[in-house]
Length: 249
Image (cartoon, rainbow, N blue to C red; front, side, top):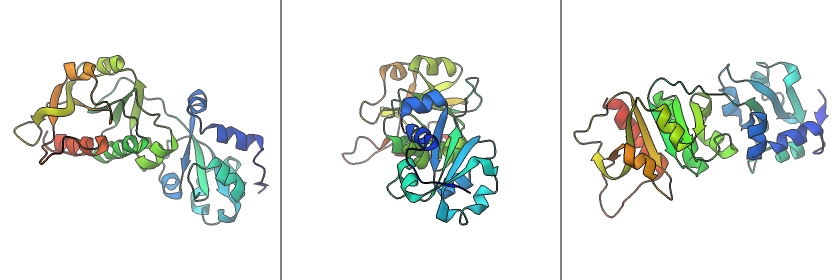
């Protein structure tokens, strides 16, 4: 197998451009890095190409055998460092196609209202996948195909349907749902509260909180807190609330 050693190679430059949000959107592709992420990708994920450091071809042969050899490209370490978004590349990454989620959803829903932190978004995706919640509506939030979101999701990005939409579109999608939102001063979800099914649960921005459009239309719920603490990290609070919703329904 020929090894690409030039960072100016046309194929390499194309993948490098996928670090840019607008290019990912126009091409409908994004990058997945890491042995565990790639080996656990569901079979329905369309993999356009896999790049592997030449000296690790044997190590990752158990992954590569799942794919046509024409879709596997060997590169040297210098090229892999250019393609990778991590400080220390593990030696394998894949270019995969972004799924198009259907807005005719079924099942409970999570709405992300202005989540700007990639780590939080990825953690939320991971939690939803763990609970079997497939539907995530992302309004005014960070791009879920960014490298940090994908890595933080630990494969959850392939097991959920993420719809990027406006706040108004999100409300239209869940118009037949029982709408809840996490915010201070809401009903304690660990009290007598019991969520009505099907539900759509909203969490607001880390810096700006819940937007007015959701605050006005949702039933406000909250996590009990002691001391002088007024809030939790968005991913932590939503994760706790989702487990409460799922196991108290």
